Image 1: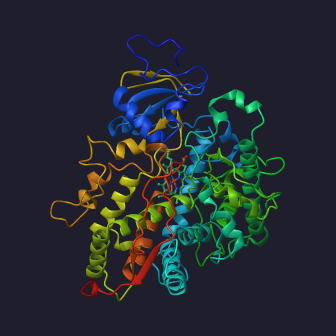
Image 2 (image 1 turned 45 degrees about the horizontal axis):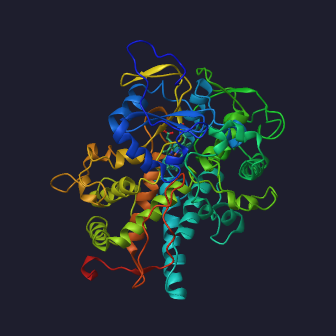
Image 3 (image 1 turned 180 degrees about the horizontal axis):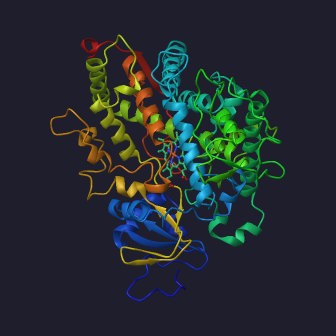
Length: 559
Ligand code: HEM
């Protein structure tokens, strides 16, 4: 950017001077969300830093971010061609690949439609109002009865994260693969229980992304990152292969163009274009079991939907399940020890990503919620009183209770805001030369969006460092103030906004409501939880082994 001439009347974004080669890396090494927030106070909402040899535009301030991602959404919707992103899902990732053209748009639409079909579609077998509700209720019930209460009886205390993560992973597993794992299943445990090892991960990703010369030096972390991606793909391919082998489209007319190979991650891709049609949800009319089956169905069905121009190669359809299940994983700079890949997923144990759409983010949200609940027992009590008043004990909470529990919902919003555990969105890039707030930004410029800054901006929030759910309530306390709620930035905005947002919000709400209807959380006497965020691609907290629960009784019984 420094070298390029700036068109007359425009300015270059200001920013701190950096060192040769390293740029501003030294200032940003520790807690970059805080360092960049401090720098934005000095240089403004549109600021430029250098990370290694790469110039990075850093956007702060809700209005500026809305202007860029929403009003000028097309200009800022790209993803940078970061070296390490090329290896995620063989460079085919919906989330990380630099493609933001027609094929990307059609794939994103398809992934959104898949998620919707397998979350809000009515459950063909149960009394729940939809599939998502059925999966979450089941998992939350299991946590209450078979885990938390039992652990209390056996050990008198427990660490909740390791149980939450399996339950949340089971929800996305059910949607993607129609499969539920037991809490002691080694295959799933190995896949999800290693997140702890990644809490040191730096948000800026792999140093080789920013200092190109490092790509040519032997790097243990890069090697392990590549091993992970190979391994994760191998695990996912195994699931997809099983689906192809057992796929049965049911009573609908048989089609003659069965797939030649599974999907394009091993060997040569099969660039047969298919035409998109409406997503097939599970129903009594077909045998579509899950998202993977539905994606396979999309690949097979070339006769329908000729009215859409979007053509997606086959292999780019089925591997969308990677982005949904959690292949969207930025590189771990501090490599853990990995076992050799056996294609069974076991080696992926150490490779759980920090920003993993499918389950890691939702687990982190629930885990932060429990930390706040035990830190603020009066807030917990108020949520339970609201649950008793509105839902009672005769039935379990439902997704449709959202909108009737304003205090609980305000608590969740405040948890998102205060923890800001996804401090930055995934990096964006400009798709053409553009101008923002009078500053010239050339095409293909890497852009960081500082969500943490927005959520702690004194111009938007009174006393931003305090945890106050009431800030989201209307004056009479009977509803959530929607306008205030929309100021919390957690899922990005605009064309790259998280496609799992509704599912994530629904899951957090229903898990919490079901747990809190039955259980009261605390920590052992004399223990305190440590709320200091551990910086990584998502902010986690130290695990606490001293959680306790007791079964709670209707409001009268609560002291
Ligand atoms: C992208 C947050 C849950 C799927 C993102 C982004 C953020 C985010 C910040 C990047 C937005 C940007 O680059 O501007 C979260 C949080 C979650 C959550 C806080 C939970 C509390 C989920 C779930 C799924 C999911 C449950 C899917 C099942 C995705 C996908 C993208 C994405 C596919 C990439 C979108 C694209 O590049 O076009 N999420 N997410 N997320 N998320 Fe989520």
